Image (cartoon, rainbow, N blue to C red; front, side, top):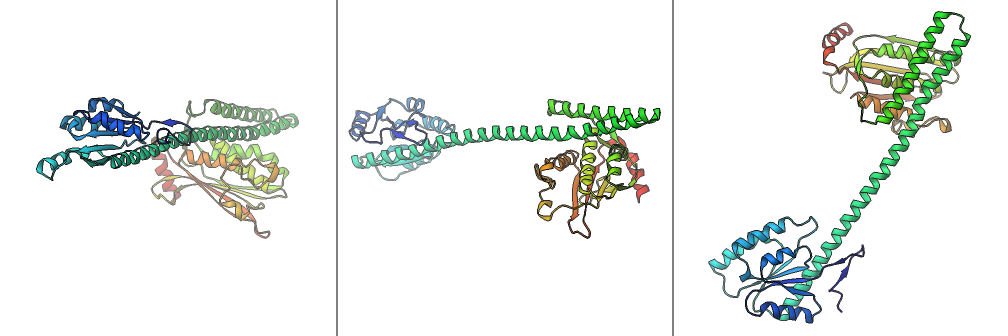
Length: 406
């Protein structure tokens, strides 16, 4: 049997290659089907166009005699054709009435225009012409089935890609959690050491409170991770300078142990509406990285001041600068430094700290950028962070702060 009867596409799915014939006059339908079947083309005849519409998706081609189409049926068929799946555009071989061009034939032509993919054959037509036209239409239909299967393959591939991306995000999230929880745990360890060596009860109480804050930070990280967008992080008016002071206090022993001099210019100004825990993560990452870059001592300069965003001068907020005299960031890494798993610390770094930092800044519609030099005589890195004021209730404080700054 000729392969036109059943076409197997790439997915191995058999597609319909049946010609559905509608020719209501005399024995036309019977004779057309007999002709097509002798040429190994599967054929079925139906009495009306409405019956053909019921077989539309399973048909390979519609062969319709013009006299079977009334204006009402043309509109109904056009509506059915418009509702085909995106991949489907079933071909129609229309057997027209013979005769010269008249107003009536022009009217019928305008009525047929909504049908779309139509091939006209004027009767009487040669058998070879009809067979060739039907085969061409069936080949076009087979190509449509291939497009359908490719679209399904793409959908499956997209779904697999989404699942893969979810797994990748889960992996990055797990690594990020480990990285972020490690910072407060180190701080708690340092505080416990200080409490053991502290002879003053007030100092011990102060260190104990700081340890409680760090443990609360661990709890907050775990809670946010478990909820993962289901529960919004609590935001409140937060003074950036206060958060920086607490982070510097926690890093104080390590900074002193590395012989790092701290210079700070912290203007309290108006608060930003943010999660204090997330701001602590942000600044702990920047200060921790600066500390790691100054293993042989150096200078850490931290500055905050009210400012306007350079790209949008009408946006007011707080500008934070964290500058160190460390080894600097190699030039080939600077454009990628905020991407996950990019690190300057070799095997000792996860490459997640600055990625988390940039995500926090972006969450608050802020901006972060850096300047760095790895030149041996003038090495160092400066991170600039801009956090906008977000609370409408802070309007008076913002105005007063900006006036004072100017």
